[in-house]
Image (cartoon, rainbow, N blue to C red; front, side, top):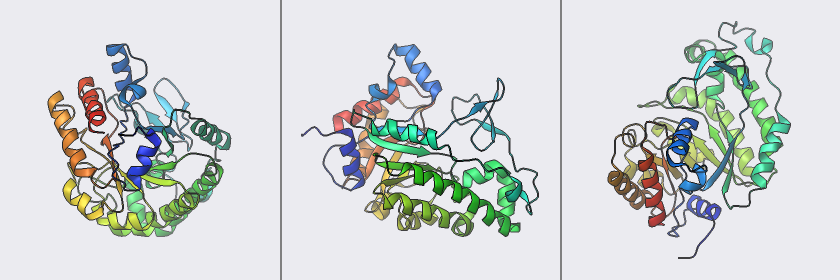
Length: 340
């Protein structure tokens, strides 16, 4: 088999070419990485796993005190001490604001143009052949509720329509300005992280998603696609009600593909010609408790199912946390190498 670059493997998968070269990418938290380094003495977990992505986040938090950080929008975060890197919100800047004046009175942040350019330059300078991804997280719905609280925003979506439209409009303006800064650089994809789903259906329901979220996301995806870049959407949970619409507005790669939620065979049959699926190995129910041999078998099974006719990137459903045995993650990577 001809050896091709990691970048080309991912591109072929997205273009639904069945070349036999299977791409994979395993995200992990800083806590898992620390555990791995201390246990094995190996410093570079990314290369050890053979990850195919170089994904750099547009994220720059500022330390407030020993436990609290503020993100670029003034949201206050605290470490959840759960082995993850996301944390929990302790300060919502718009929590108690009057919907009549909240948007006008809030100090929307300026785009960090120099920081964004630094990320783009790092991606462009890669010489290892990674599939290069500019990563945007807490992006749209998540950004709105991180300002307002989840309960507050969901209530506003029903009772304060004008406020919610104005809030999303201002968030969209900010994001479109950022995209103008980053899209002319040399890399392959933009990753949008914005959780919409729960274990059964959408958090806000499909009608409110179509009303408030879909229009802005479609504009951002269109801008990215106009520059010849791929769109990767990360959203946890059950998106079956809108899966076809995601294809219509330009999503190329869908992550996380949780097997607790989806029948993977049906998902591949119904949408596999149009979407590349990225994920599928459960970090919720499978990886923490599985044996090494079960991990190898699961990897082979899902590759046989999902990689047919291209359109699949092997990955755990979420970033690997320290409750998952190192041997299990290594077994997945080894199974991917052998399969490809």
